[in-house]
Structures are given as C-alpha cells and as structure tokens.
Length: 383
Image 1 (cartoon, one colour):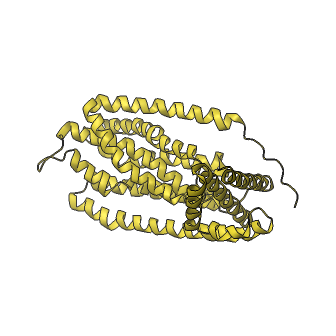
Image 2: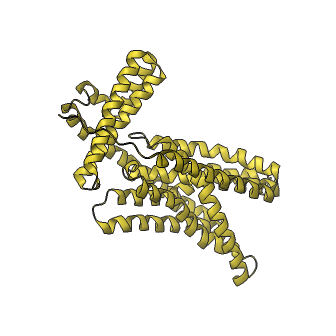
Image 3: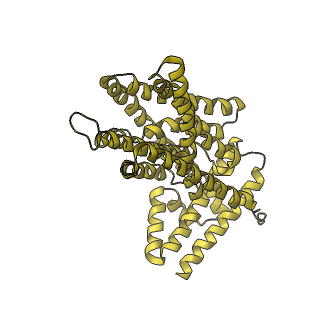
C-alpha cells in the first residue's frame, strides 16, 4: 500500500493566534464579571461564593471527561468551552438579562422585570449563548466533531463553566444577605444544598439538549435534519430552562419539588442512559474498523482486543506506565485516540457524512495514526 500524502499543517493563525485572542477576550470578560459581582455582594461574600462554587464544578466536569474517553477532545478546546461558558456566555447573559429586567420593570411595573428575565430572557439567551460555542465547533472545527457524544461533552463543559460563574454570584449574594443561614433564613448553606448538591447538573442538562441536536446534525445526511436537529435541541433546552426557572420563581415549594422529581430527575436518567447507549455504539464503530487497520499493517493483531474496549485500553496504559513511565503511557493513549478517530471517520465515510475533503482527511488521519504508533513504540523502547 502506498504511503499517504504528508499531512498539511493547519495555519498558525488558527492554531495559535485565534486561541490566544479567544483566551484574552474570555479573561477580560471574566475580570469584568468578577468586578461586577464583587461590587454587588462585597469581597468577603465573593470569596465565599468562589469557594462554594468550586465544590460542585469538579464532579460535573469530571463526569463529562469520563464520557469523553473513546476519542478525547483536545484539551485546549475543552478549556475554551469551559471558559466561554464561565466568561463569554455569562457576561452576554448578564447584559441581556439586566436589560430585560429593566424593560420589564418599565412596562409591567417595578418588581415584574425579574420575572420576565427569569422566564423569557434567561432561557432564550443563556441557552443561545451556550449553544453558540457547540455550533461554532461544528461549523469551524468540523474535524474535531464526531457526533452526539462530542456535542454532549462540549455542551456540558460550556454549561459547567456558566453554572460555575452563576453559582459564585448566587452563593455570594446568599452569604451577603443571610450569612450561613438558620431555621428562619435561607443562607449560603441552603443555597449550596439546592444548587450544589441537589441540582448541579441543571444547566448542563439544559444545554446538553443542544449538544445532542448539533451532534445529530453532524452525522445527518439530509439537509432538513441538519437544520432541524440543532433547532429542536435549542427549543428543548429553552423549554426546560423556562420550566425550571418558572417553578422556582412563580411556583410554591411543592411546585418546585414536583418539577424536580417528576421532570428533571427522570430526564437526567434518560440522558444518562442515552449517553451509555451511544458509548456502546462508539465501541462497536471502533471494533468494526480494527480488522481493516490490521490488514493494512497500521496496527498489529495482538492489539485488537486491547483497543476494542475502554477497560482494555485503560489496563494497557496502566501496564505501560508501570513498566516505562508516564510519558510512554501518554504516547499509548495518543495512539489509542488516533485509532478511534480513524474508525469514526471511516464510519462517517460509510454514511456519506464525511464531507467533500474526505480522501484528504482520511490520509491525514492515517498519517497521524502511523506516527502516533511509532511514537508509542519508541517511548516504550527508550524508557
């Protein structure tokens, strides 16, 4: 078999300049949000809010990283997703929601603006701001978007960042107004139990609907599906967000608990099962591509069983780490990801959704696979 063409390098304006510009912009947004929040609740309350918000965000992020194991997304994009949610989407939502609240007070009377903001503006514009990142990955970095699981992971990280920033303010405000709280006043402890323990996945649950829609569009063959799937995902996210905010703003405690236990908890279970099903599907896609890679001598037959399951891959990396060190284990992990990426791309080619540049992209992935295997072998030999 002839050697595939040499992989073309992505222009540095995409690999270096744009990410740096994006991070600088997000950092500026983060500083503005921090200043605004501190001005509202005070420095001590802000620090309490940051500390309390850090506790739930770790498990939420870890859960989405656990989902993203067959072909892990680039760390820089995951950081950017979290940063966009925490800074870019958060400051966009703040500006729009404050404007909606002011307009609502003017049109409907003082005190009604916050209801307009919670029921209309927050669901519409917060989900739009969060979903814009996921759609942007699909449109501008198509090679990093393989399907539904990628959509769920990107959406989940964006929403986790957004919830982190939102929690800082809510926890800080609760502390500033009521302190830790007691039997008569809901302080920061009560706020943490509600937002940090009972409902840490609410924002991710809403935005994951957009991720699923964009993920379905990524592998759709019909133009109608490519348009309708993200739109329906967005509308579902908006409706769930509005229902959640409405139960907390307009309903009683029993209304809120009814929505929580009869809608949000079952829906969370359905999404978990859906993710589990798709991960099994990804396993079948990878397993189906391995024999052709063996036949082409890009992988060896003894690796098929190890590459065909997440457990086998994990044990392989662990054994290499024990024998040859962390660098060699990381090289094996890169090799495993390259195998998955090629298998997913072949599956897309079979479905007719790989794009017009499929031959060139396939050659790049083959080159990357062979190079990653060579690095893995060399790392283990040197160690």
